[in-house]
Length: 114
Image (cartoon, rainbow, N blue to C red; front, side, top):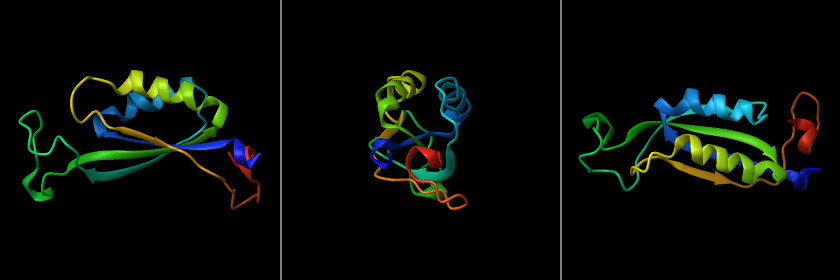
C-alpha cells in the first residue's frame, strides 16, 4: 500500500557510488536515481579535503535516491552506513521518509509502482 513506502536519499562523495550500488543491489533494491551535485557541510575549510576554488568550497557529490518498502528501511540504512562509514568528516548523510509513489506509465501506486 501507499503508506508502506519510504524514500531514502544518500548524499556522499562520487567515489562511493560503485560500492553503494553494489551494496544496495545485494539488499534487493531494484533501482536508484543518481544526481551529481555540489555540496558542503561542516567539512568546509578543513585541511582534510581539497576544495575547488571554482565551487566556493563545495565538493562533487552524488545525491542518490531510492524508494523501498518501509519494512526494509532499517536494514537498508544499516547497510548504507556500513558501506559508507570511514569515520571522517564528510562521509555524507542519509535522509528518508515518503508518503506515496505513482508510476506515470502504469498508474500503479505504492509498492506496485516500484
